[in-house]
Image (cartoon, rainbow, N blue to C red; front, side, top):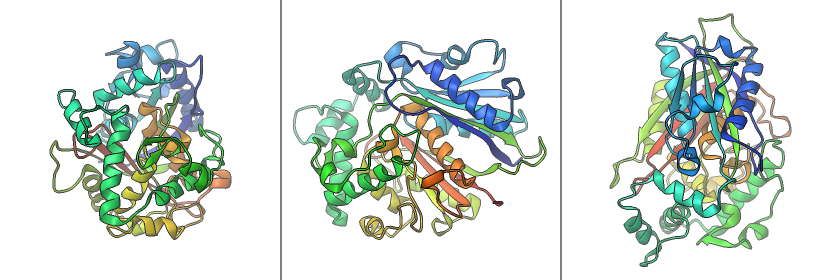
Length: 397
């Protein structure tokens, strides 16, 4: 099977943009990724377009990518549309890799784009319910709250429920989760693409409005607009590129309603380690799906960065901060960088490729050669509906 490299990445800033569209954002990110690769749209064999919520919020179903990218630049290039909750664009990379590795195409462009802030918060929260079983959402939500009342935000109620269970078995505290938000806000302050670029203190995080106990508003990922894109190329299709980043593994696993012996995050990461021969101790930098700050601490354990129950200790040691042993979310993560749902997976890849190339400026993880992205989405109770783990490496400086 062919080896495949990421040869171009592009991204828009994340935030709230009054005049943005899914298509405009996607075209901007795609143009940046192609320029980074030194390619024109006509050099790409296939486009994989990822979006999660435009159908629910804007009524644009079925052919989102053709509409978003339509025009003379892309002509009749095949477009494949992918929707897979918050993991849509990392799933897009997974699909594109299969097409290039098989030899069907030499190059592919993956675009993740989302426009959320043109809709009310209530409409966005309702649209996100499509990421779970609508026939069971009421019963599951009431289990989260322990009352007959449905939660205001299903997903933050879910993260609250997961977090409280984790606190009981590990001894972690809300102060620990606040410290994740502090760490990541400091990183985002150095990231020109981040939605929030103000470094916070623990006191500021804890003083925020409670969304779902113990999570305050600045421990929860915000609604955002934005896009990110990745160009991949078969290693045998062109002369060697000095700034190419090898895709060592892309593993997708689904959650099982009612639960399984291992969560999809554990299943996917263990499979990625087995495929690559890389272990947690080999990782130099990680981006994980911290839609709530507590999830980052939980992911330390699920990814094998520390022993079960030791996530808060790893955080307190400074190991996961920029300059630590294995920095996690140097982009600022979902909570500070922002979370335009369908764009998040490619945004993680943008950050990791930038780190592996040594171009991250003040937030650079020095000497980074091996990176891992974990992007999960949806919910099937008690686990995410999908998780994609991607492992990247760069052998040369």
